[in-house]
Image (cartoon, rainbow, N blue to C red):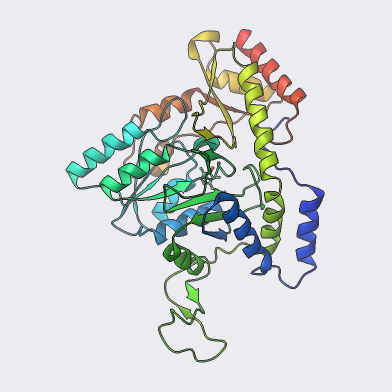
Length: 386
Ligand SMILES: *Cc1c(COP(=O)(O)O)cnc(C)c1O
């Protein structure tokens, strides 16, 4: 089976992890800060905070941005459930904004309409979480302009998008947001096994994120409430979590970052090859805007219904049956039973539902060979023409 995604681990990666195993610190050692610095520098952001997963990152970043009971956050329904679950963890109220059919990204027109409507109702969001679907940045300038007008914070769910660019700047620079989150799950671009990171240019957010990832505890003498009672002294200032990443993971991430550009180049080459090989077939790859470079975590296509007379499900099952590990990204979050029990229903976000109904993610990963890619396209062609 050719999988839809897969990590690439080099001899250097293994050496980096083994070196940590032989060192004094398995967690909270020097590799974490080195990893954070490396990603922050790559992205051109001032601060980076590494945590145990992107889900944890979204959770504490949304707390740091003020989400609690009575606060509202909007995200995309075309995402993994973690984007919106992170709001529910701290009792915030979730809303969704429909996507564009061509990209799977949050539609600026839908966002504007939803904001106008919410303003009239007195239900404006406190936070918007755009999701950079498949690795392509959303229209961050437009979202940022709307945030100035309507007064919400912006947290980028950039789980798919490390290594991508927007207007020539790396995703994660936070030029148009308060913070951005990356995932280092093995199917993503760079891996630490499990892991995530928050990028920000805001010093106040950085300080609180550092505390929230470790129980809300600080030893910083400048912010202690009471006088230090001795070298052992620490204070818990708010309710935090154990969301720390280990040094083993950070060392792997640090080593993987050395090859990020190589990963992105190969993924873009594969995408261009897919675009070319698929150009005469009745399928529509995600459109990438001219002012951005996708990190191509995924290579999603939409299948034209009327061409072969086959349903998406039939095509999916035939691909799987032929050893092609295709996936579907995503079942719109508002269709999940848990979200339906909160009042969301089918028909609420019609473009996301239409996108879901026709989407298939083809294999896309650094080690996918040209031969395997030809095989994927050949089999897809055969299925569509049969
Ligand atoms: C993978 C993913 C997450 C969660 O990442 P973890 O590191 O597994 O917690 C969140 N949002 C999106 C869009 C993702 O694809």
